[in-house]
Image (cartoon, rainbow, N blue to C red):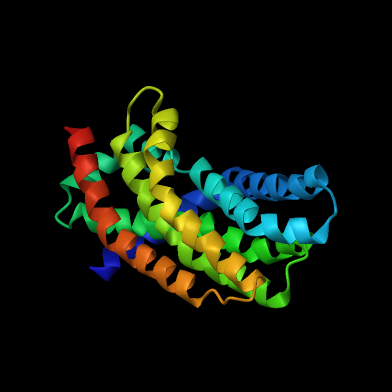
Length: 222
């Protein structure tokens, strides 16, 4: 079971390394969007600390979405997805591997660069640690939920817009608890409760999303 998951992860990572422009563009988008806010609202530290959790999380959410339309599209276009669907192993395991690979090339880099960007918003050391941990916890849920949307819109004309309409409402709980954890730390209330709920969302989405995505893919391939 784990062999097929690790094989899919290794394959998708190798393909991602051949398309490094996709990774760089998502990171560049994240950096630019977050960096524009301090320039737009001014250098007032209290205001920047108040805006930081929401700005960083919304930017991370949108950056994650940039690569979702290609999660299954390339494999669908060259016929690989049909071969994987006909293989004896469950398609849900293949999707699990693709979701993990998507997080490794999209969510993980965002979490690594987020504390550097958080310095622009005058966040304390504790808030930067919680921000990094929250993005590490929350972005796998974004990849898992996004996989459902990518599978449901596979092969549809205007699928990118439809994907956004389907996925963005489902991202709201992750956004609330992720930004809430940082905000609670900034205000001195502690973000443990928000992080616990964020972890629960992530585990639930990673347990459910691959199988829901696999069911949607089978319908799309019929």
